[in-house]
Image (cartoon, helix red, strand yellow):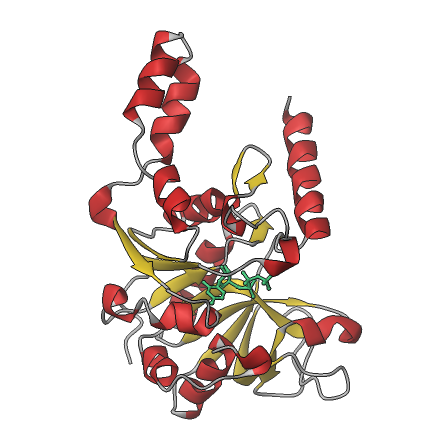
Length: 287
Ligand code: UTP
């Protein structure tokens, strides 16, 4: 196995219904909700680019046209801002646009699950390892969370599946996919954990660890084989975690990476508000 290929492709599954944020997400994709001064999704696009990603694949749903618009040039708006002397704003608006040759748009007609959305990106991804970022998990970190995963992959020196994990109290694990560590004794200081599998939303009694998976992944294209089977999991949805478990059973190594940084669950109102507050505090302390 070679770990030689770099991670240059990222998939953003952004076709979910965002039911936990209704009615705010009735007409607007959750990923376009503002976090401080820009849409949630823009933060994770910037994280990916800062981590060395060169191609971005968006899996969009019925509210996807506004997402495309956000990442395209808007010459009329730019000109209006320039004519009004608002050059800084014009520059910021221009900077949102992604070069067309670096972006692919894939449509998920109905929201059959996160795993299903990732599976639809197979053709656009091709044969190399790729990253998956869930924009509603916002990570405030000195070193971008995805860059930390990429560094862990480089350190391990091989291909495989790398999952960003954070430790939660047992009472909270049933909201997450949870890592099944290879060895029972994983020290608090271990950053990269060799794992045997993952389980989706275990009860506190059956939880194999407290290392909970968050929305940053490095995957191998082998995952697509398992996703093609279309197995329905928790909530009747096609879950990525189930496909990961199948892929690992077929011999692909799995690692959890305890990243440095603070993660906010912006897929629900309180987490989103807390993240806004944290960014506002960070900005006001810089002023
Ligand atoms: P979530 O589990 O957060 O689901 O999806 P959701 O539908 O967005 O939100 P709730 O649970 O109803 O409030 C995780 C990620 O997978 C994407 C979402 O957009 C989000 O980025 N997703 C989910 C899809 O792209 N398609 C789907 O069918 C489901």
